[in-house]
Length: 352
Ligand SMILES: NC(=O)c1ccc[n+]([C@@H]2O[C@H](COP(=O)([O-])OP(=O)(O)OC[C@H]3O[C@@H](n4cnc5c(N)ncnc54)[C@H](OP(=O)(O)O)[C@@H]3O)[C@@H](O)[C@H]2O)c1
Ligand SMILES: [Zn+2]
Ligand SMILES: [Zn+2]
Image (cartoon, rainbow, N blue to C red; front, side, top):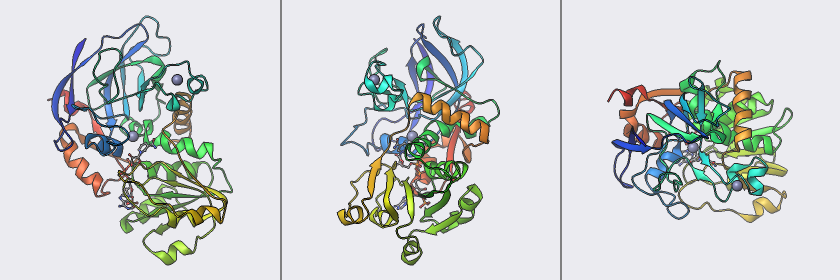
């Protein structure tokens, strides 16, 4: 075992603060990574504050962070995919059983025995796993992905969660040229959704509550932007969308969007608000429409997404911050005041 600097929170109401955690010495299958950047996902905030207590109660102390990019410093003897000096990424998953139907299909995000990057039982050290708000991490090579060399690293970190979480459902629901696609909420996930929908050739419409994001949405690839609190602007799109991706982190009216779907259209929820959403059955019945959800993506698809990003030069729009600014960043995230992802420069933590 070795010690690593990290930021953790001790309770749902405590700020994140500096601490030291134990990391395992790499086993033969492990990759040890010096973390260079870690994105701040809204899920980090939900978890730090125990907002998902009914589904996934937070175990404290909690070290969040699952949008990790860094440099490999050491590898175990059986590691073939990486060597010291390589760039590497880690997302929301660090382990799974490898034997169930989901794992065999490369869909580790559905494995009943998966281990999330933080807050899940750690089968090596006991206790729970600790995430990317840290100077290093040790992960089984199966859960480490390669980072295209041509991308800015700070702006690549958010691809590991925000990127795959928006890419995967678009591939699943067949977003291509000729389709009309809506993205609800221009935050960390939403802005990646816009970039992917545009890159896949769809007619892309952004729904936002923030009038100051309209120009950005167009610059990021939207063909149209709708202020979602303007009922008449919403009404103009009634019955016209093939697919809508809902990336909203807080309570909101999903029925307003279901009414915009075409016959057999689908709305996928990736946003995970603390409170249940209400659903009007008729919105689904009249158009045989569907609402579904989608969690992150498997490892093969995560690598596919990163390669797609390398090819299309897609990264996240980031505001790089120091680790010490994390509490302030959380408050701004709650106000939808980030353009469009915070990326923590871990040099700031090493310097502490
Ligand atoms: N399914 C998964 O696997 C997965 C993975 C990662 C994250 N998530 C979840 O996805 C959600 C979004 O994460 P994120 O990191 O993208 O969050 P974020 O950066 O905070 O973005 C959320 C966006 O939602 C909109 N919004 C916020 N409050 C709203 C309200 N009261 N009414 C309507 N719109 C509101 C805002 O967009 P506008 O300003 O444009 O309105 C905001 O920018 C979170 O719940 C997160 O936990 C799920
Ligand atoms: Zn996330
Ligand atoms: Zn499995």
